[in-house]
Image (cartoon, rainbow, N blue to C red; front, side, top):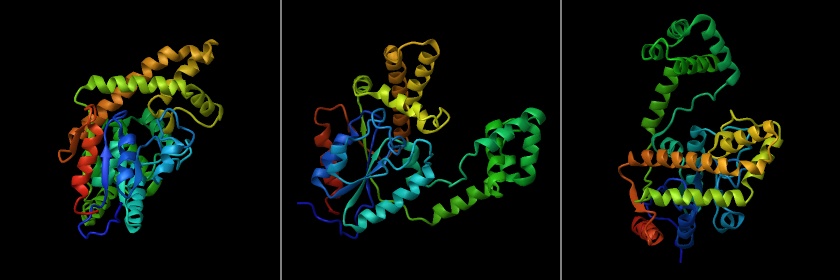
Length: 331
């Protein structure tokens, strides 16, 4: 029988991470059957409503089995930053622990995980109109001139940037113009805040394949299933809204961008949308493999993680045994 978390040395949370298609959802639900947990999603795509098939979002039945958080909390027109995730996840963890349960963070958006573990500077959100104005100035005056302007308002940041570092100069000027506060001050305040915060006791269980080919096969199989479930129709519905575009974070999600661009091409040539399946499969699978590769690279930098071979026949049993060891003194 599940016992409430009450030990003074309890875990703050438990994280179950891994690349896409590694089996995180199934493992999380199996954990929830044996321990009193609530799941917090660490996934930058699952936050969006109406993006269910292409994100491999848990089904309604799966969502009903255990409380889930940070899923379907944004319209695709809205952004959701790593800083917002960190703030929301910290608040949710406190609420879940107050209910006598263990927060189980599940997902593969490593930037979100890093923000939660290490902290992140809560900078002003991007301002596309302002950024366009800065780029127009650069076209007229040159980036060295804008670098000189930055040196006047933020000498610390300007000193570490090359005069032609367009991207970073643009962002630093954007932050200054929208907030009236230098980027270097944002960073200094963020560092002070992080230094004052206690570290999280949050072990990482990482589902990683021994054989990369196993994961590649899972990715291809998942894409076939998504297409059969109506992924293309889902993207068409998003396009038909009329207010979404490819510059939005939501539409840059893996699979959605490729489908959107191919639908644009089909529309321009008068082709039947379904005719793009082969190309969409090729591009979508390739993009998803690249995502998995980046996720695994992030994970290799987390030396303290507990690795579970997700392609092992007893991967689920190994996962449950690891949770048993970690919670033995706290649940």
